[in-house]
Amino acid sequence: MAYVITNSCVSCGSCESGCPVEAISAGDTQYVIDASLCVDCGACADTCPVSAIIQG
Image (cartoon, rainbow, N blue to C red; front, side, top):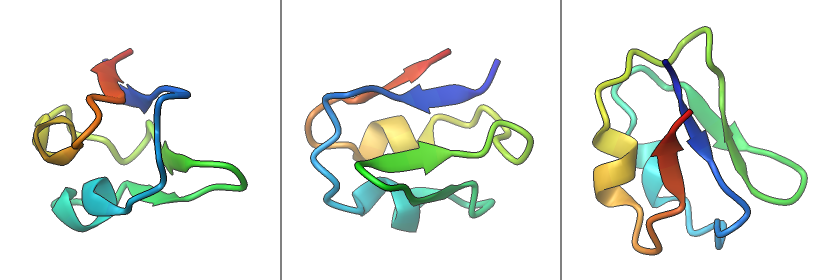
């Protein structure tokens, strides 16, 4: 199951640079994860300073 970014996202960008498969991009109001590219590694969740990324 792919990771998702919750509304707690502060748009800092740390998750985007931490994703090894480039599945994360800036959305209109917060960063988003492309579930078709996500490999469930958890690297993004480890880099998020506000714990806004969870397994969906």
